[in-house]
Length: 269
Ligand code: HPA
Image 1 (tube, rainbow, N blue to C red):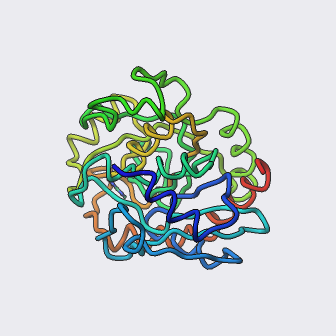
Image 2: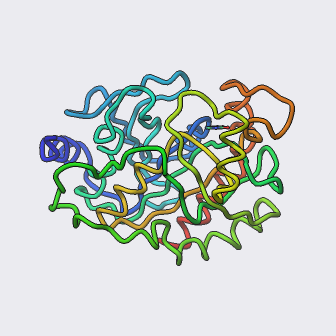
């Protein structure tokens, strides 16, 4: 991976490097409309960057300001199920680290496993489960980013979770926190898999975020995760899962989601 070439390319295009990066999940791309002073760089133009293949995912880095706070947003992320290697999936996170970003906000859509959750809820990710996928850090350690063996007791920065809780309560009327379980996809889970995940302690399940969070942790980045529960997971209610429904629910939750992110970055800036 030629990180230096990518960093040099971006630095030639962007003067102010933000401290906060936001990864926009399924259906949450409209946050990009609220960014001012935009510099948009299409993934296909960035040396060594993978290119997004999922319909509805755009594929650009947007540098700019959100309510006057400098940020960079990833409009469209890379998923393992698309065929990318885990190194490719997490390439942007390492680039953010090298650019000087300090905090990564990971957003996603997921299925609700916790029976107290409802479609459209937002959940703060407190911790994650990743039993069924290989580690993104497998292979020679990239010691310029971090150490071989990584403490995982604080993947999602506790101080930031505490900052998020009252914001979530104020904006959505609820303050849901939970464990996000990572499945590789692209199939949604079977009802038996969801029962198993519930037994293991999962509150939500999705196909992203965990590789990025692990790399963020390895690189010493602060990390925040917010999930939109776009559906109840397989077998919980008598309803078939479809990507269309997932996107539709994510869109409905978007106003709250954007507000939560804006208030959060104001607080930590
Ligand atoms: N399972 C996995 N990924 C998802 C789901 C789900 O139910 N909903 C949205 N992304």
